[in-house]
Length: 256
Image (cartoon, rainbow, N blue to C red):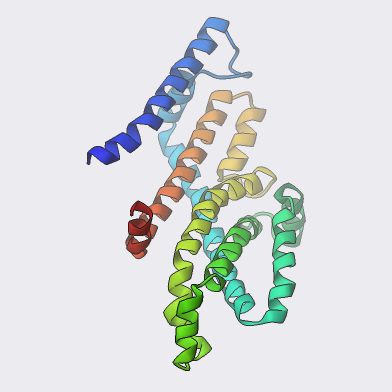
């Protein structure tokens, strides 16, 4: 318990100092809200519009979850195929790197034109594209970077490739998978928000931030940003919890 408190209080203290300094800067320098609203204004706006904030955050969270699941499944599938087939491996790795280099700001309008702009599909696809690369790269590494001694032992026992995959490669890939997922989960929230910012239904955080800023409701716009931060942290913490539950041996290895 003491160890957990020692791990929690430094970032909490740093965050408190940052907010106090931010509030003091705005008050002392008399900075206008359209330049930088005070934390007190953001907090008041957030609490007074709590139901709206929750509904908007839930919409973006749903988009992020759908994109995260889709991108994760495709990334795992492609990594397993790339590990198994040499030709596909040489083809897929450069393609995956190219996909990661595509700016979502440029891709979002194209997908909006391809699909119904009122649909959630373009934003889910954008999120899946962003999620795909870290999942693919990490799972592929986990499947291929197996201990040579264990691999040779299984081969000496005439184990089939399917048995090697099930017994050795997949357990070895799990910590790599969660490394990629810890990167991909917060990115899913960012990708969903950015995709919403450039058009589509007005229920998401991205569109609400854009409309609030356009209507000079800067405190509300920053309050939506706070919701996005909370969502990103929640996605990351849920991933950490899943990692501890499903791969407890990885945690013991790190602490040893």
